[in-house]
Amino acid sequence: YLPAFRLGVFTAPIAMRLIRSGMLDVLAQDYVRTARAKGVRELPVLLKHALPNTLIPVITLLGLQFGQLMGGAVLTETVFAWPGVALLAITAIYRSDIPVMQASVVMLAVIITVVNFATDVLVSMLDPRVRRGPLARRRPTPCLDPERQLRDRRGRASEPRARGRSVHPCP
Image 1 (cartoon, rainbow, N blue to C red):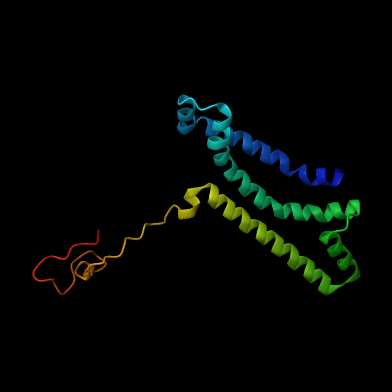
Image 2: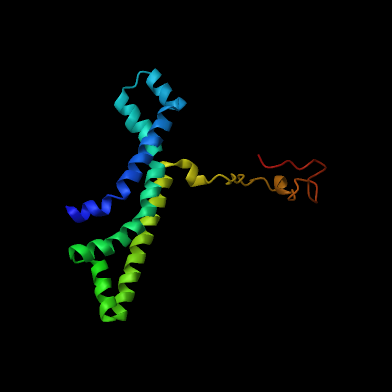
């Protein structure tokens, strides 16, 4: 248990502080007070309303700290003599085994990339604002009527005019 404790001892306090401060902020929000005023019990309020909004920055933090965890695994596997990729890389460095060093570095890079991608997907599932983005614009629905498509970029009617009528913008 000591190697696992050593790996988690640096990440856990940061995550706990972030969860605590995030939960205190979320519990003061209007939608949580509204759920309580409607008579929803405390546990569903915490689990369904407050916790998902609190976990968004925590998941991002843990995803970013995964690289540091992998770096700490090198030290942990070396000190505790646990067989793993990090110990394999250290042994390859001592023996000047270039292909094994390259393979271990590429494997760790792929693992870190997959974890960061999974973190982004998980955050986008929890936070709908991330899916669209703050600057994303809705695209207008295309017009089905060809007479209504005769507008230029500035919104002015283009040539030709349809039978003397003005050209209307798309709905």
